[in-house]
Length: 470
Image 1 (cartoon, rainbow, N blue to C red):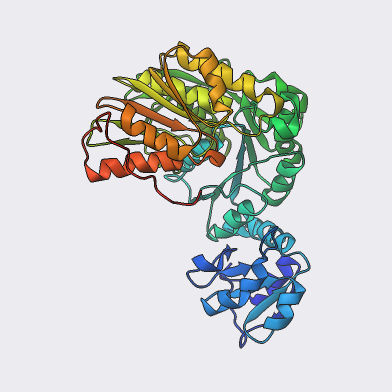
Image 2 (image 1 turned 90 degrees about the vertical axis):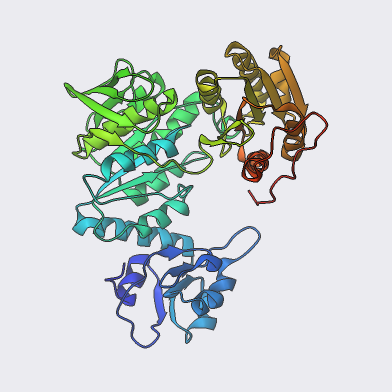
């Protein structure tokens, strides 16, 4: 937005320009909502919240070097002579309107936007697609969890003016949310990577989850492309004749032909065989790769060759400790689909004892106990040697798991228990919903690796868990 004047920024946001700090002629670098993270040149947006009102930090933002502020009338009136002040009755709506306007400007109006949603794997698919596109197009993508009604506009506004491809992630917890994000992003390509039992507590059924995800299809312009799993009947009723459909997976338009487990991956797409050498080989990420290839081809990129992907934090990160223990840090979030995939990868990749530290899966409603029990049965079938459950819901896994197991109340107790249970040669999967804060377990194991400690004997307590806020 650097080329925009303050008046144009205000007009795009639907805001009133109250102050211009001496007639500035450049626009902001991006938008931000946290005054503590400003680097200088941002438009600070003061959002109201249940516990705090961001507008109260607008003066601090200006002092920290913000280009200007977008705030509600009570805050704007007090700041009118202190810098560039944009007044809006609803700053969030102003932020979203500004993102819509900037999206239309990207690449001189020619940027291609891909929006990705799904019950699981959408962040990894976004990361893979961005890596596929970067050698061919100037590509920007959502950072970390910028996938909500607040985060997605921030991701759009962070994209440079010369962006040719923008890859956005869309999350939802209820009806109407994907539709809102689609209206802001106006994607040329929409991808639904899967439909699974996530947010059942709020939506009630898989059919309702599919309908919520399919708001992406409904919001596409005629002639756009939607990418969907080949064998997902729940989405068929939501397809449109005026939107091109590309399927991926077994029986789909984009299929996996060969994966040798360590190097080359062959993918059949559009009558051609593509050869890729990805930096990952997990089965679930190869499926995500198929979705990403379908999206890349939809924007005119035929990917081939080496593919190095830097996945977002806490999504299957591996750490080899000096004690001979391998940590798989996959604790960003969890649901039945992603839990099964993570257990399958543990079973396939662990050379020694398989240890699963699994926390509660939240927002599953009345089906939660049974879904946890089924996961315990899956862990048993896949040969997990030691299961540590964290939380009251996860304890239901033990009813279907006959092997060595330990149930603990919380993440700190899990970190302490692992100090007694782990031994050299173990591969440890750590996964659960964010509310369980299993990053504390991963941090404790990581700290042990950095300290170079030997594997703890049975009498030694585990090191204290990290205190990072989730």
